[in-house]
Image (cartoon, rainbow, N blue to C red; front, top):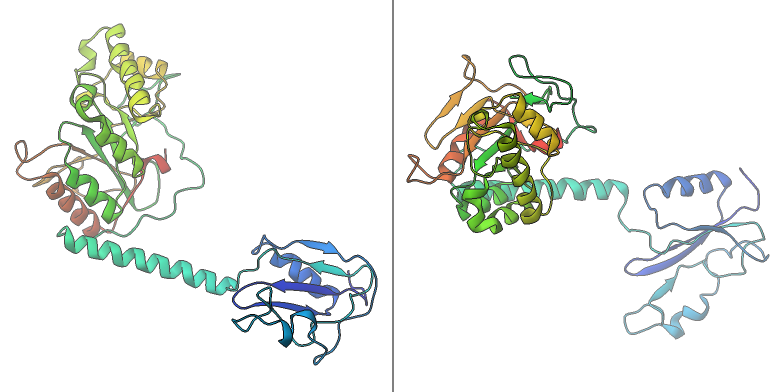
Length: 357
């Protein structure tokens, strides 16, 4: 790649803006080309025409010298010629690197900026935790897996060809759990604000007859990045219905949510966790891809555990409900405080279910 007459012209624009011309070896050309991986605005093109190499330091400043400086001390065009930058054009065949804009920050500075943003986000979470009286926040979830995990129906649940998998946990070694909220009866605006400010992901499974008076609440939830899934039209115990009745409960709610929220749910949870093979067949016909049940249930004053060890396991799905103080010994924010405290004490993070399945 080395050629004795290869030159690079690099124009760097920042505050103040400079035009730098330097003769370098072909190896430096490769370095600049590689730099394009982190500065994609670089444009590399051959120079037209002939000439000699740039003048040494102390050469004339040219049209943007002292006589053409603007009020800010820069050139009339807002550029300043670095000493030695003027001179005849390089020889034919030289390489010209013309960036539209080269960021002044180095890659290290960019990484530092990212770390500073994360630190700032953590400070905001800590401030929000004090405001919402959360004694301990779990850590932020790790990055989601590059691919969705493969789901299989867990032992003890109905499985079969063409049926969506039924699960109570996501198969992962990540120390994460998933928070899901059912029905939609209580529409507490404090819940939306609290979860947004604390940056806690969750998923909802919504029943039409209690949600239809204010689907705007769930649209706001979706705008915050939290998905809204199917929990039937009227919250009936599905195995008591005919196959056609079950299909109506599931498919009609798929249609309702697509119309009201703007997307067709991929997940479905049967009311009371009750289902049979007809339920799963109907769900599959309506486009459902998985049926997540739960491993633990959260209330405002307690956790109910699905295992004797009373501990979370990686990938556990937590169930709770949209309830108020009239139904619970506490509010939705009280329930969230208890969940966050328990998750943090056991060293878990809360991840987004849809990042995994």
